[in-house]
Length: 129
Image (cartoon, rainbow, N blue to C red; front, top):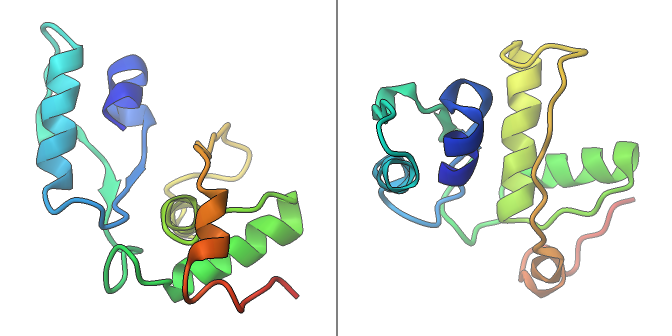
């Protein structure tokens, strides 16, 4: 996220906390500061959703499950239950809330993770019907 914020600006990046680290805002701010020389790296300028992390990093959440199903059915894209599933869940909530408006150019960064779908204890027996 820090690299995207450094390149695009904080007003154009929506981060989603997946529970991988305890200090997500501080970590993104620090890395962002290392990437830019004289920019205002005030953490209040960052937008990081923390409402789809659920009970923790490795727990397959209902929001992630719904996002996996929706994206698979509508876009034909397979997401993993931890990173891209939660990222898509955060994006879906932002659209439903109106933070991201219909017709607005939006990119979901899918950085891999497919093996996580097949190795995740809760996702293995589950399939998109």
